[in-house]
Length: 366
Ligand code: SAH
Image (tube, rainbow, N blue to C red):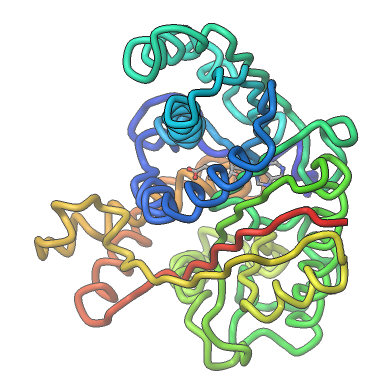
């Protein structure tokens, strides 16, 4: 599968759009705020750059896209006031794959700048240059030493491709406990290749002392066979397998499909950072969030299993529909997610189902 051509979050603002189904990712962004705040503040205090260049990698489109940009500018504006220092000009790079709905982002930029002017600072904010960078972050996307701060949230668990050698992952759509060892190894090696390339490229793009804060879905245990990080994918596979049994999907079509998705453990991440050698890890934090976080705060308190199932199915649909349609065709999609919704509702009513996240804050040192 050609990721750059196929993969994108669902565009627009409709019922199945990413914009409308990204409450979980928003919650993640909110939880990581103190880590970003520490990183940008200590960088700014130390360097006081005249222009501050920030890249958000895997920005997607919707309410989350400019959330971090706004917050970082707000922090730097406050610091500038405290330090009695002239505000910097801001150069913001919003990166995602070319299929991302950049047009929607561009349309919202004027409104965003007005909000900044109105709420964060009366002057200075005019100098905020926002650019879209449609390219894979598993490669160089910006000039050498052009960045001060790199941010990426809920994106790096997507691999650059489905690993080669994962063809015999029968009945599965991702690495799971029942995947053969060669499939598990193929996924693991693909992640190592991708993440080390990501680090190498960011090390070239960041100037010395530049900071990077990344958050991704991870794994709580080293042992894949007792891990639950792929449970949500196992349940999606269950819906697809039901449809194979009913003759709606061909078995070989099912067996030849895998998602380019991998959840590393914190030690796998640390090891790649050490091996690549350009970054010092300042902080690593792990946290868990209930699947119900996809339903929003209020919903977390309620016990409405059907609605929970629907919301989590929509969350997954917004991120996976492009790849499923590419492989299975459009006709089966509503059916898949209808089944998935019920499977999820059932599981969520019986089990405590959690997402596991890892955040890394690092400094480019050499
Ligand atoms: N950061 C946003 C979006 C997360 S969704 C938020 O927190 O809400 C993940 C995004 O990563 C998607 O928009 C997807 O297209 C993007 N992505 C995945 N792989 C990518 C790659 N190789 N290069 C650039 N963007 C990528």
